[in-house]
Length: 120
Image (cartoon, rainbow, N blue to C red):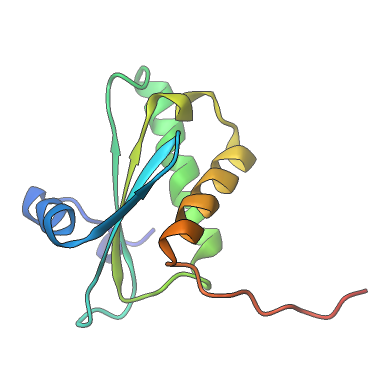
């Protein structure tokens, strides 16, 4: 992800927490806030030390970034997103992570409907 697509500063996180909407499942909490003045979405990640050691936390963050990269055409672009990983996220592989995040995004209605391509 590009540097402009990251949320790093605490005031930016707090703004999304205070004014945004949230949705959760067992593995992840997703906060999102509409920002009309930006061209593409931004992503903030939070993985607590309670989830696991540094290797586990970094793997979870890599998986989340990759999911957002793959789903970026379907995401609403003028939003800030914050994903908080819960303890059960440590046991997921990439496909389970993608499925879980897609579920949360679907519940929070930030994914646009997929355009079906030709069936073979």
